[in-house]
Amino acid sequence: MGNKYVLILVIFTIWMVFFDTNSWFIHKELNDEIDKLEGNRAYFKQEIKADRNQINKLKDARELERFAREEYYMKKENEELFIIEYEDSLKTKNDE
Image (tube, one colour):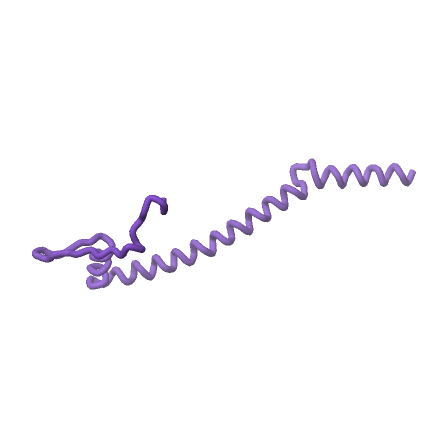
């Protein structure tokens, strides 16, 4: 009689660990994915905070003008714009 219960217990354990839809392996994969997504969540919260700070800074006209000049090379009328690029900041074919 004892062997019958042990056999059933072993079969049940193997089934739950490997074959069931709620198996241990599936739970482990899901937990790993949750950990990865929580890491992404922290990163994106930090990025949102940085973007909000940037938006608040751009509400000021001087900051908006500075941003437009630096990022989009905008200029005023009758003004010349010189872009200086250093050799180490240029992309080469090997960088791509």
